[in-house]
Length: 452
Ligand code: MG
Image (cartoon, rainbow, N blue to C red; front, side, top):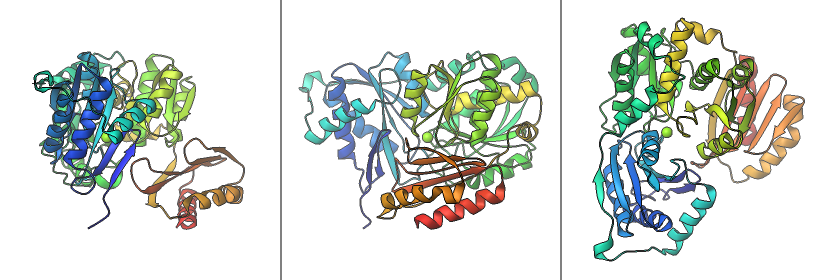
């Protein structure tokens, strides 16, 4: 049997079900989280994957065993859990989702009472309780109660449509036709419903909420073939795809071409800054197109380490108006401080309506970069090679500015290169982005060869 996989990171615990991640671990994490929070209620939701129900029961067992009341919000997008935590004045939240990972994976994401990812300090405390098994079990008559609330998707949609940056009337006038591919995940109901409330004619593919991922679930261009075909077949204005927990959004234009998940954030930033001046925070893996658009709108731009918790932390520190992650993760802190495909879709449609152009033409107006994101298995001597790579970077890239906060990012005259190990998988990620396609191709090949 393959080596068991259980990965702990700032975004929670993640593993392969039946081989690393099992209900005993999950129950203990539930008990540890409840012991840390001591008393009150915790919101628990999940994505639609097949192991979700088993995981849900296990985590609820752990939470109630230490006296925590649980509000079960069912199958919902991750951002819906975040919104419910705040809306219910709960002391925390748990979302059971392995996000963009394939079906064999599942994971727990933990939120504190602000509805945001628990801090690194809280995460250390949680893991200490888990490792020492110092659970505050309660006697039979003090265990927590479980209630179910099924209306949080509707509340999430209504809150989204109340955001002042969305020009609802303009969107409604356009009578857009949009194909939605939710990969049968937690966006299956939320995204189509919200779009219908915006007067959109919605064509649903892979929106049965069954958790059967009919294609690779990460919303990146190579996984959007079915959506591309559907957009052309139905002559739609665009197609949107989300990952299984619906915090990331990617788009296909009216010609059936994927525009790349990076541009979701670029367009959302453009739309928000159209109406208000403010600061933008993006992570170190985000396309420069977003920085350029933000600066053109008079915004200051700050870069954070990768990972939603890191982005959100910097957004608070810089009092950011808008930002997020280039992987399709839009964050509007005045709404709630987490990635959200619903707010992303609403902002993009608002931008399309205000600009009054087809998506492909709107994309033409954005700064053009050629980006390749790749990943490869980590070799044993990766760290030593990274040091060597840094020493030789000048030869390959010319004069560079190096950012060491998250792996290594080299900014040079024609673009940037980032090499970093993943928080969630035993791989390293490479991003090369330049203003020339051949240069991007060549640098990608050279760097991959260096590390393999
Ligand atoms: Mg996700």
